[in-house]
Length: 306
Image (cartoon, rainbow, N blue to C red):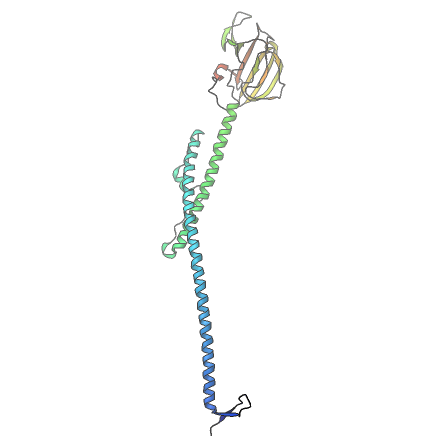
């Protein structure tokens, strides 16, 4: 026996009530179809929404990748330009090393840099183009870091040599101790003006008026400033590196023992004290306690550079 569902429909305006009779099997089919339609619609909407979201994400990723590729290309160009500049600095540095008396850096050493091994090659079959590019950039950066350290060490070596050479130059007697006057007695064997016998003259004499300024011929420290027997008032300066100078027969001493002096600084005045036949300066140069000819340590004006 068939079952039926009765549906009562009451229209507005007090119209007659209508009765709709539907078999239960047909009603179930209609309900199932409706539910299936709704479910299918929901699934389609969800899938479409997910597809749209994936499309937006894909477009976003592609845009970001394009920006990253552009940045990588710019980075590659900047690294290439930096490599050219470092190579130029390498050439200039080798010139500076030669001027400092140092051996130049070998070009093969420069290409790899000191402080690390050569970069290892990657297996091409197992990496992508992007990975290869990033690996090359990483290798370039590591090499330039090693090269920059090599340059810094080299510059330190150059500066150390030049500073040491400057100290040696500053402490080497190299100027005439008086301006004006004239050379009256040379270094070496001569006739002693007091005894008339041949004797060794341990310095040179500059004839000049009393009061003529006497200058230190190099940087140093005063180790003696007093009356010293036949030398009269005398100043001795220790310049270091084995050099000492003496200035004798002074009429006045401007410095005391322990004073630091610079080349060209006035340390006293020409006089006639001690065993002397007239106003003059007796000037001596000693190197490791041996007297040297002071004229060998007088560089002509205009040819000495600090």
